[in-house]
Image (cartoon, rainbow, N blue to C red; front, top):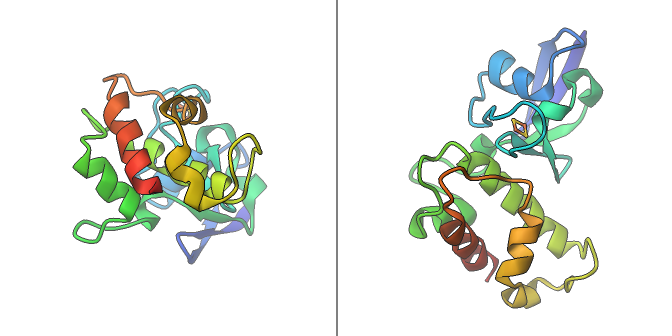
Length: 165
Ligand code: FES
């Protein structure tokens, strides 16, 4: 099927089998391999991307469901030498060990901070200026869909805290 995705601000036309996941379309059809395939079952979060601004597991969705949608992958945040603030915070705080989960962690953190900015869900202040009050426990809960097998969670959480302030 013919679909068009807007990926990192660029319209990309694709001809994909209806069974192809969004993750495979990004990795294998568009050669955007930053989004990782860990479990391919929605359990690890390595494939997290932003779909119309909201974080999703790209392995759980079919590409053909997203004709016309806007997608942001890790490649859309920053580049070597010009990292986004969130990427730079992960570097500064050693928010990784092997690095395999890192793109998903960063995309999930970006989505989480956007959710806070939108006041969603409502148990935490909608005001970005209040994000310094975000507790480590809340960060762990909100990031619970992203696993790190190296257990680099302290650095990951510190990076998110730093990026939020
Ligand atoms: Fe998608 Fe693990 S690869 S959640």
